[in-house]
Image (cartoon, rainbow, N blue to C red; front, side, top):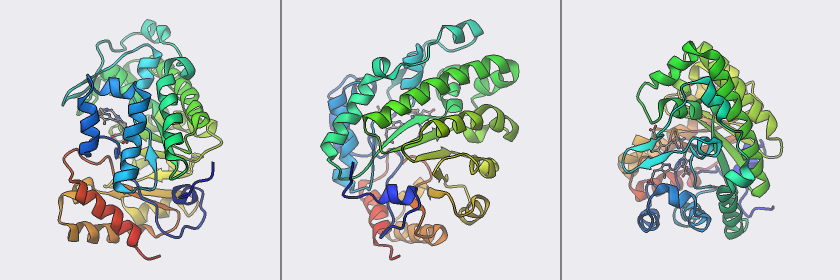
Amino acid sequence: MLHKNDLILRAATGQPVSRIPVWLMRQAGRILPEYRAIRNRLSGFVELVRTPELAAEVTIQPVDILDVDAAIIFSDILVIPEAMGLPYQMVEKKGPYFPTTIKTMDQVKQLKVADPETDLHYVLDAIRLAKKELAGRVPLIGFAGAPWTVFAYMIEGSGSKTFSKARGMLYKEPELSHNLLEKITLSTIAYLKSQTQAGADLIQIFDSWAGILPKSHYLTFSLPYIQRICQAIENVPVTVFAKGAQFAMPEIGKTSCATIGLDWQMDIQYTRQLLGPEKTLQGNLDPCVLYASNQDIARCTRKMIDAFGTQRYIANLGHGVYPDTKVDAVKCFIETVKNYEL
Ligand code: 1CP
């Protein structure tokens, strides 16, 4: 489809842009009162994710209200375990919770490879609706968790500071671990292919827990599976966001992704040097900058762009926007990017 605003696609594919594209990780939900109004009408997060009309509506809210250059489909990385047979709950103010976690090879064998058209049809319906309502205004980003990050929740059963059960599993049961990662990878490839068929113009892989692995484990248990996903998605550009994985940047640079996301701790110039000119970079303002005054937000944003340069670059935060961020601060960030002169 032709887009009225295709800046993010141009940047991702290395074409020149007339201004820098900008969006925010976790822009759908969290910060907008308009999101909370819809969310409060429902029993909870899971119902919203499973109601395509409303999921599409909250997907488009940031485009209408914040004027970002891309929408991201409203869903969660945990729909994959559920589609494989391991359901999750979203506990208010606490986050995800899995009543059952994976402990044995027998359990891994019982999990299925997700069939997106049946198990995840609600996400695909939401994508089709969102695309229709966007009518080409901006591209739509589809996403999934990286297999390692999804694995971490399936073993741990919830968020965790250390994910010690999940990391421990890699040492204790490497074969079980690879078997589970394989199933998650096959499910994710099928899912992301379906997302692009439903209309996703770009795909982002979130490896939120990349940074807690030692390098050798990252290169064994995470990156090879990410590379398989990158290779399988041929028709749209893929972004890899591996939070905390500065240590593996040269290797991430060798995957076939178009764009690499930087978290806020990563050094911009050093990372560009490691990756060379062929990849597009995305990121990486510290989300906490948005607690500062507008003047400081603008100053920090411009300083960040000075370091990235204006081509082969997509402006974003270094991780998801925090829920207590003021909408005005987000607007200031977006305006500063848009007004940056090439
Ligand atoms: O009730 C609510 O509104 C719940 C809050 C919420 C929301 C709005 C959760 C629970 N998930 C989401 C949506 C979501 N999750 C999106 C929507 C699109 C967007 O605007 O970006 C996306 C892309 C995600 C991805 C996601 N979920 C990640 C990867 C990105 C990241 O932030 O690192 C992870 C790790 C999750 C798990 C998850 N879901 C929700 C929470 C609170 C968490 C994190 C739990 C933890 O800290 O371990």
